[in-house]
Image 1 (tube, rainbow, N blue to C red):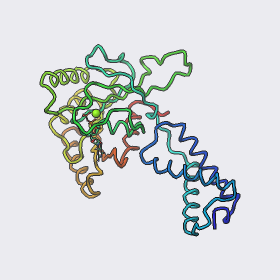
Image 2 (cartoon, rainbow, N blue to C red):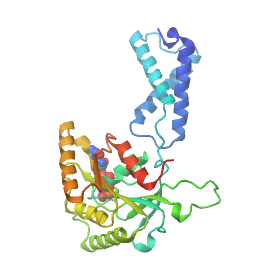
Image 3 (cartoon, helix red, strand yellow):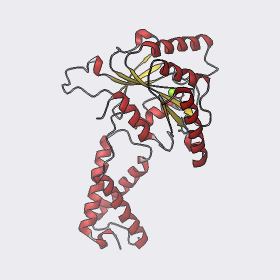
Image 4 (cartoon, helix red, strand yellow):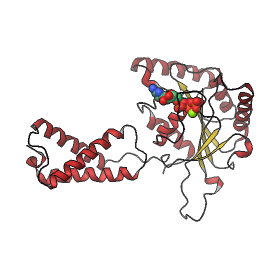
Length: 299
Ligand SMILES: Nc1nc2c(ncn2[C@@H]2O[C@H](COP(=O)(O)OP(=O)(O)OP(=O)(O)O)[C@@H](O)[C@H]2O)c(=O)[nH]1
Ligand SMILES: [Mg+2]
């Protein structure tokens, strides 16, 4: 029994719905990691569709169980097509520039959210996950990969393409160089520290700070220093306890509780915290909502 045996008209409709999803997704160059499997299913379903039209939807030996699995998968994908996920205003992020000195910073006046954290903590990975892009920020196993303040543009495009977005309407995500990597030469470390301190001190556009910490080693000295900068100037901060996929559920919960307690005793309620994983995508929607809220972006 093939799909056609169930109800050919309905089966064709379901598969056509899958095509709609496939087409919409292929327009979006950035697939979520989890979507790769879905894309595989869609390619497979496309092949089925072609065979459906030629009256040979499934091989003759296809078992009822196999047919049913195909049917269910098609139905789920069609349901997904009817319930599109929430819009992601960060998905349009594109690389703008990398600044090594103050003079290289883009004009100050719009909205910015900075991502800070120890070297190798997972800042660039978190940024990519929020923007649902795999290769926006450079990720590396080798610590010290991000060596400047890297700006990504998430501004709402101007309605009139001949007009540039005004400086006060510009929206950026900023990937900061990781701190605490011993192999970075001393003078470069001193340069970053001074540059970051001045950036935090008087960057008007800065609306929020995300501090990315490995869930297994949270709240080290430099993390506290960063949070201190933010609290000093009344900037809201959000801590991402990342690489949560490396711990079991219970250990994740314990780590979250412990960090929450420490943050509230040191900084009151100005610093929020959540568990996160760039690998399993745990907590991505929650973090994206915080960042988009600070940037006042809803579309
Ligand atoms: N398992 C797991 N690995 C992660 C996660 N996030 C990042 N990694 C890995 O950790 C390493 C460092 O990630 P990056 O995103 O480059 O870290 P970074 O903080 O930007 O590092 P620097 O730019 O060097 O400061 C890479 O090998 C990532 O694949 C996560 O949530 N889970
Ligand atoms: Mg990085």
